[in-house]
Image 1 (cartoon, rainbow, N blue to C red):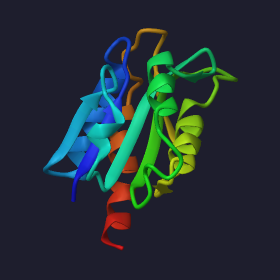
Image 2 (image 1 turned 30 degrees about the horizontal axis):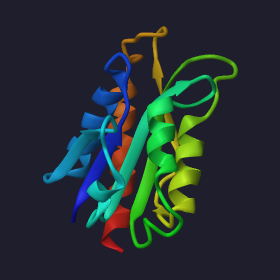
Image 3 (image 1 turned 90 degrees about the vertical axis):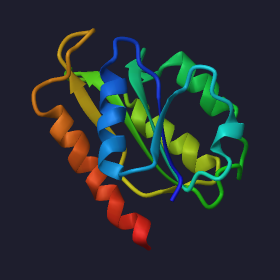
Image 4 (image 1 turned 135 degrees about the vertical axis):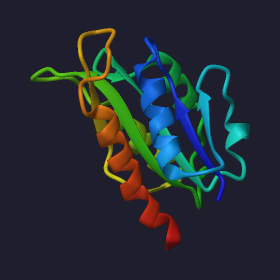
Length: 147
């Protein structure tokens, strides 16, 4: 199965989460930055996992620009999931939910509930246990791939 984890990261925390997710999803899973990524790279992808930090209550500007390039139906037949990294606040926005909605609008079948991973402070590091949670979340996606 062709699996791609696409991420945007300002301080490296989201990249670390993306790499953990890819490791859990298994051999052959590619991890790529959204910087310079075009929708052509998604051709042939069967599972797409997308994540970025929350910036101003929504996905990062680079991720928003990438998602805006996805046409309606472009991801038909692709299974997808979304995550974000966030500071632990009472209210913090929901980049993962917005990413998930954009992927679904582009035709993807969402296979996991959008998930946020906590960063200590604006620049990190990731809060204790968050990489384990990322592995667990990614592990919950694996059974959906056998359907």
